[in-house]
Length: 321
Image 1 (cartoon, helix red, strand yellow):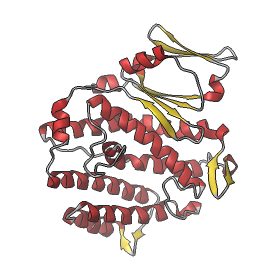
Image 2 (cartoon, one colour; image 1 turned 135 degrees about the vertical axis):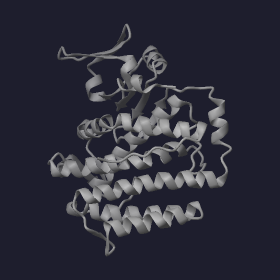
Image 3 (tube, helix red, strand yellow; image 1 turned 30 degrees about the vertical axis):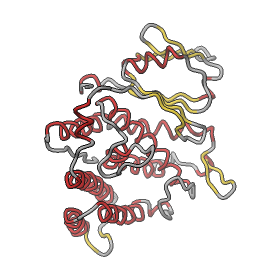
Image 4 (cartoon, helix red, strand yellow; image 1 turned 60 degrees about the vertical axis):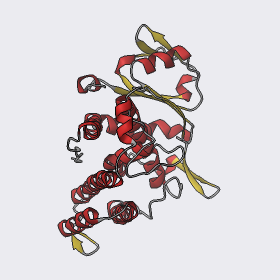
């Protein structure tokens, strides 16, 4: 299992094909070295990498992939539209005790854990609303709304009712949090506007980051508790990214407030919006920097989940600050 002292040194590397077409990537001892055409050189120790993201077409050697995986790093290959099409994950295999516990939870236990995950997510959403001085939701004060929501979640008798509550709160959250930037509605992967595209990109990076850490602990990331088994869906990664979505939400609003967002970075074609390829790294770097700021909190939460599964310790909580 990866220790906190080791994970503290971990970094994320973002590489774009437009930089790589005239550049060289090679292994130099235990370092990943990039020699750029303009003479610049970048060197990163392989053991310090938790994830490497490559956007667009690039040529990578099998030796690089082998050494990256051996040192606990994961490699994600993304299309120019920011969709992940392949991943090479470092995995702690053989933890059969952990996986056995994952697959033999009673339904009630799974529901109880799911409630904790959803509560954590909602508390962070309300914290973000409080940070922009929202006073009321649906005619109720934030405190009353929170108390009512917590009560309903604790009383939820099945996953369907829990999902309904989560969806209702998220709808209220998005409408208020992004009200100042002409919010319409959340449409995952719908490409209906620029905000939804940015959220999709940010959530994808978050998902892959969470998935990378889970696999280092030896989890079967296809077996979740809130997101149930579904063909080819990494349900556990979907579960444990929920409390951290607020990191991406805040980053998007911050882009607008700091004028980092520019509508001209996007285009519209055949009924869909899309981010122009030349601006992929601009927004990717912002999201990855935000994730790195919270990497130890994400690691700590996943570690607490591991101990919760193995030893029935209390599940931790992430609080957005």
